Image (cartoon, rainbow, N blue to C red; front, side):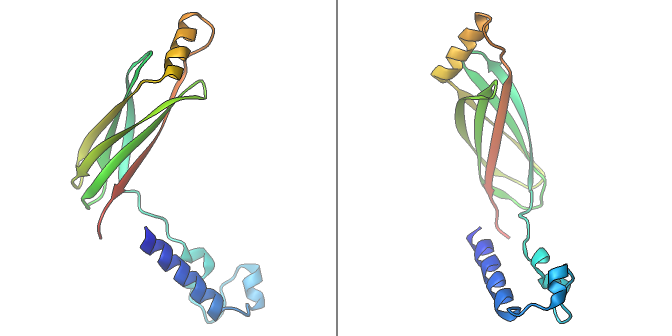
Length: 150
């Protein structure tokens, strides 16, 4: 990730140095005459590849909530150090978060990860739902981190 940032920074610096006096066509969005289309500002930023797909499943979700995630490696690369962070919200209010280390996922394979949220806030919200004071709408935001080598 640091290499990508350093490369993008180096490219941006080179573009500003070589293209300091911009022609009038740059203001209209058309590429300059001597500059290839790949070197313009629009083509310089490259998005990171999306190598995974995941689906969220709920287990028991009362005063404790079990969150299960199926992570699929869509690429032909082996993914190392795959981690899962999950943030549970009930009615838009943060009820807790949890973390799980999934491990290595080989190409075109599936691994499961899961964690359990046990917080005082979650227990309080469950008790308020039992008393009929609130609704109990569950929502989970998950982030899956991974590393791979080219």
